[in-house]
Image (cartoon, rainbow, N blue to C red):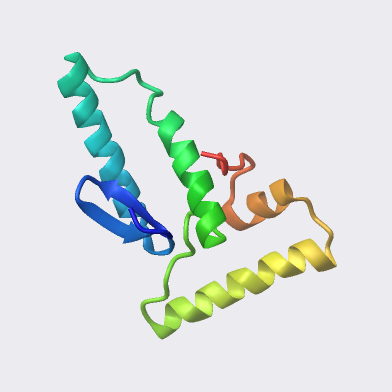
Amino acid sequence: MRAGSSTILPGAASPIAEVTEAQVGYYLHHAITMFRKRHGRPPGPCWHSIPRSGIHALLRLAQGRWPPAPKATCAADTLRFTICDEYEIWLREERGLAERSIYALMWGRSELPDLAA
């Protein structure tokens, strides 16, 4: 394996900075299939959180943010993302709100997602 790359599946190498959410999902699906072949049964119901948390931590370190920010596909998306980013900054810097309060105001839910997973 060359420096700065990671193997997503056997025989397929991608630079770690270019790994996508779809590739991580495909890798986990592949890992479950391999587990089933080796052990004759599927892994436990929470098994996916074990490798996923390590993968996500590595990708946050390598890419600076994980999951990646959504990409704008049109001018309207660009405007929406800009408005949301500015609103989040305003809530944090001008109003001094905590992350949980910002999340609740922006997404209508009080529970923060598991960012470590």
